[in-house]
Length: 542
Image 1 (cartoon, rainbow, N blue to C red):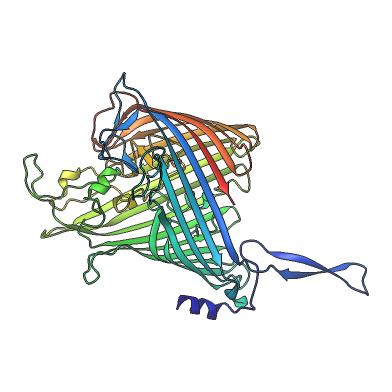
Image 2: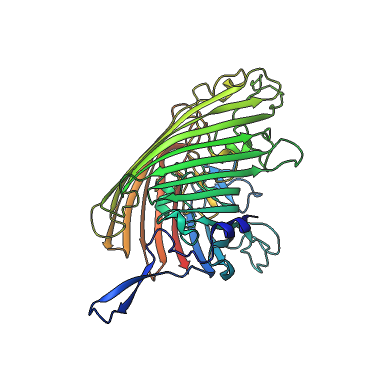
């Protein structure tokens, strides 16, 4: 039906260039009565056929962070020193060394029969640590002697249909288009289609991926109106429990962005999550009372009536209705039009938690704000000074105070419902906040913006310089995190990195970081300063 609808709305002969480029080629025709050639626009043929992009990452790492459980293998995410069994080695112990590898592949096929108006997209991933496992089944492993591991992971599988605009109906006008995406796809917290967006579009607009930044199955409509207004409307099924029972988790998202001037962006956002799973979805549970949320530094609320240490009361089933409402502004966020760029957003997180057999619901009311500024002061893409500040409100009542209906005052993110579902990447830290260059082992003192409900004042910054413009970059930076309550984590980080490009579309780097005066949420300070040093190699294959 979707394919049929796309065909009806996009006649085969109504071909115009694909937005945002003009896409017009100049065909010069010599007029017999005029010595000057006449320029006649010719529409660019629509893209058809198979497209492939691959990304190869190899990352050897040395660190004094290890795991305390022999059963933990494959992917390790979440709060440093938390439920994921990570610890900091004592003095005198041999430091850990491991090499990780990942291959990500992205495929798009546009059949000629539909003149490029429909796309079948897919993304797959294989990743492992060298020497970890072989002759078995499971994701995130398979690099041991003999290999032969069944470990292919499906990240995306969707159909994309151009409803109108370039490649579709001429009536839509120049700079106007709409695309419908159906299936398993990347879902961010802004208006941009990840198929066509730049990295800065995803990470420096909307919620800056602080709330949502992972895959989900559903429908998304991406649209552009006159090159001035962008919009996104989506509906996703996060968990489908029983087919005949109302115990699912669904997410609806609506976003719009207006460009009053070429470098200026103003956005508005409204999202709603309906959770009727009672905390039981997924392997580690779901929602703000789950082990999944606690492992990833989100809130893990104790909604029992008796929260004493000797209590034998079972945690009650808890469902939720959560809404996020916010706005963002940006000026040249990708530094495409000048030397200075800035972005900022403010979001209100509101809703209710429904506790089984309780007369009182638990209200939710939290605030998040994030601002960043960058300035390019010399030649080269890496010659940039950057500063960022993140604030989230604190749950001052504490997790044990919610059984009687008191409000939860922190924020909630996708980390309470999925693994690594929040993808904040702009901070530049490696241990204080989650390192975006991680492959399978991503741990941080403050893993979730809520900081376990303790609230957060987070600062980060860096100074980079290109001794060889666009070929070699040296960067020094750091970060600071402080919670408003003892439930959150705190600390400071110093880091540095150097990276270069040995051949086109490749990056080779060396990076290191150390934590100072740090403590994970609800825990005492580490007995030893955590640190990490790694080299990284990335090759984009097109």
